[in-house]
Length: 379
Image (tube, rainbow, N blue to C red; front, side, top):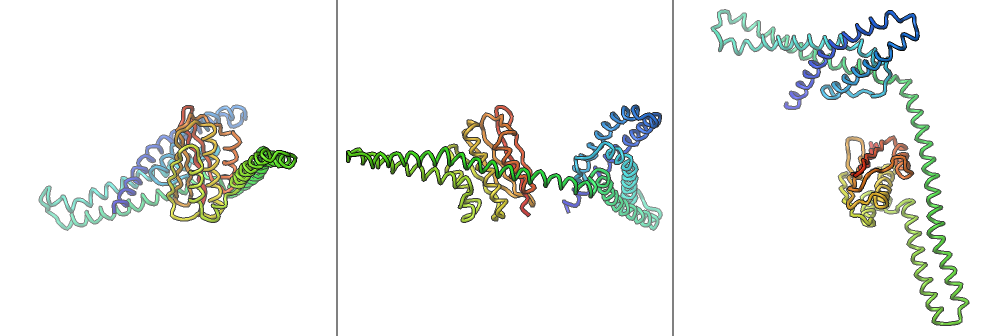
């Protein structure tokens, strides 16, 4: 009941504000028409007039988008042309005035309907049957006004999406472009990963193995048993370092814990291996599908690694939570901020996220804190 009342109040407030903006939009449409009429046959003049008219129309359309989202729960695409905004305003102002008429009918109906309650208290009723009939008609008008308000809200949604949202063909074109971009990003991520693995193997494991071979060669050529024993001990230590480096490379390629024990366990390992304290808040009760879990893991792992290397942070907070059909990954540190969104590591994470139709955002003002957010579809 409370939810229905709150929804009704939001709808009423939204329609009242819509009626106010409708008056402004009507005036804007009339003035725009008067300004464009003399320059219809003059292309250069028409462009000069359309520029400020389009900017003003977009500003009004943005106010309408904010009103629809706040009070009517209608969310429209923020990507639209100035011409779409002008057509939307021209089509919407009658709807705003209709909303005002519907609300006025509801208020009048409530006033007449309440007469059956207050009429007996305020004054003596001379004609009770007339009072009953009037109250009944008032309640009927109130009901029709409430239904009309819901209908106007539905029309608001249809008009906004008809004029502001992209057409099906435009949506398909954008989707194809997005897929081309995400595919190119995935290919680039794969190339970057290959180069990183090659660099890690060349600069880490390979150097360890070369040093191990040199130590074993010297031990074979040595004639001094004590020296040979010392070289063998060094070779044994070097083999342990090489094995550790190899495990690090393998873990960065793909952690086996992700498949064997799940995302929570893999992230616990990241927390344990971090040189900076990491506070992990894992709020999802299920195991995400493989691709989502892998991207979530690499976002956290790479973000923690970058923070340790560059941010001079003392604590890192990681939150994994579910928001509807979306898995939200949030990493925040108390470092110095100023993270470069164009850096290789963050670009790689953005491409990984885009490959799953997710969104990636970095907020890192100078002085901190740095907040990295990835939202991954997991339906």
